[in-house]
Length: 228
Image (cartoon, rainbow, N blue to C red; front, side, top):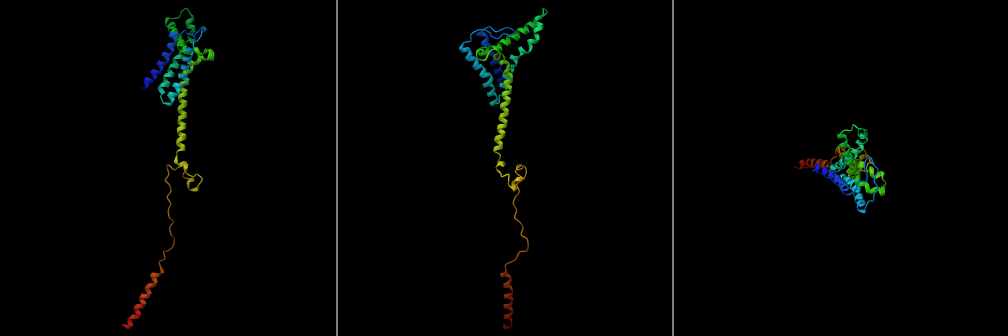
């Protein structure tokens, strides 16, 4: 299931880019100046929807639902869109010479095709954002997808920690009192001290009525003996 998220997002980005390539002429071509042309309303609307989907909707949804493989699919497409910019400048010398191999020419053609495919959905943003920013947007897909996922996960972690701290019952105790000042910090590990009654010092004094009754009984018995 996780691989399905990755593959679906990766192929979705490629399919949208190929849709622009199949039905519209390329505007950004590697190593050549863009050919000026007019952009229709439908193309412009779809380009804005695409940029919102790639840079806001999918990254935020993946971070909120904890779907890392969605962010991984976006990051993989961002790597694919960045590969031509990484390798084509290094191949300029090999392609300029007469001893260029067929493999180098085919590899360069493939990289230029990937470059045009990745740039095609952003061409309609040129009238609003200028030429430089839309051309650089495909290289932002990978860092935006990964950083947004990490940032939202960190924010959620600290938010949950703050809520758990606020709901901690130990915070309801009075930390300024003498009894709880030494035990509030370790309430979860140390037992609560139980109250004990103080011991009574001294001897127990019995009721005086019981001791006084004994001599009277003896005296009465002595007085009755002579009469008997």
